[in-house]
Length: 236
Length: 236
Image 1 (cartoon, rainbow over the protein chains, first blue to last red):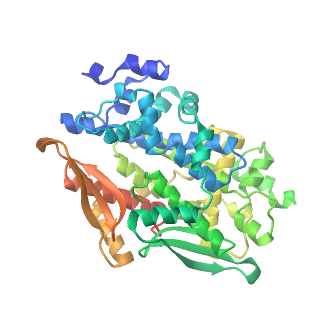
Image 2 (cartoon, rainbow over the protein chains, first blue to last red; image 1 turned 90 degrees about the horizontal axis):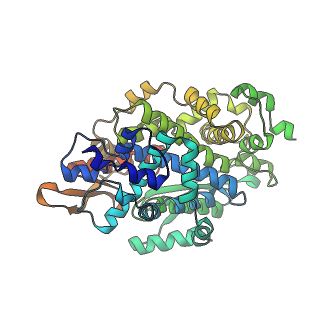
């Protein structure tokens, strides 16, 4: 049973490692859709390792971006990071790595569902790699497989005007426009600070701050786009 | 000038370290509100280090929770993490550490604004600590100062029924109720999978999946609460 679920040779080949703790890898390679399908509640699923791996991935990607893109501001770094590790891209990378050969998932998923599961499971695998092999090997893996083609992503991901971009998305998605409301103005006349919120039908999505209304709106729109991107433009 | 902005002795005392790279600490200890107030655009602000420090903090907290709370599922781990590192708590910890003695912020902020800035700057400081002193010292700092009183937080943060809890928050905040809609049902009759979305006035906040409608709603509500918690219940 274990042998069928845990393809040790294949894992060691894909990651170029010698496995130390088989239990960690067993946990990483069982997706909950497999357990649903096989009615097995006695085995672990990889959601907790996905929780851990997601944070590890964010950390090493952030560290790389901070060190290598000194000229970009925080907003651009965030956009770039969410472009690098969004669910679609992780799914594609997982497929390229042939994780579908080692991860146990339900056979009844459609193509899109399978890609999502593979992307999520890549995060679980990164969690397992960290626990089993340590930070250096994990960092190297992330650099080789997640941080490749980064210049290309920078070109595609560059957004010149977040307000216009966000407005277009919302118009298309809901058929109405986002509203900007001033939430607070503080400071003396020559040093005003503005706080602005973006609202969709009275529901506040994000806030931005700045020395002008425009600057605050810009920040609020940038944050809203980030949230959408992180959720594949499906939800906030 | 540098000496006034960078209080080396105080920093070394607070963190019990010997500073290696003064530039990293200078960057960590200038908040943009100080630059606004003093009309200085020639100096860096700490937003990029906050971006990095936030990811570092998430990672070490996730690692600690994964290793020490085996009995909790992914949803509980996420809730616990956002309880540990929400903005309010980080602001309080920063004040306890006396970061207000070393961080340069605008003198015209009110008490709440100051706490927010201090909490954000604590993340920047964690970024600086990592870059200047390495992962071990950073991990130790996080364990000593962020991961204390964790049992108490578990007790307070325990949410028995996320649907009821979420409904109460939304009712209070907006005066109407969240709606649950089934987005997808798949699989054969004996192995159904449900996908459910939570909507506020037709705006989808989150999705949940499960073997029953109830399970999917539970997950969607849990995710929605997490989002609110991460944003101090102010926005999604």
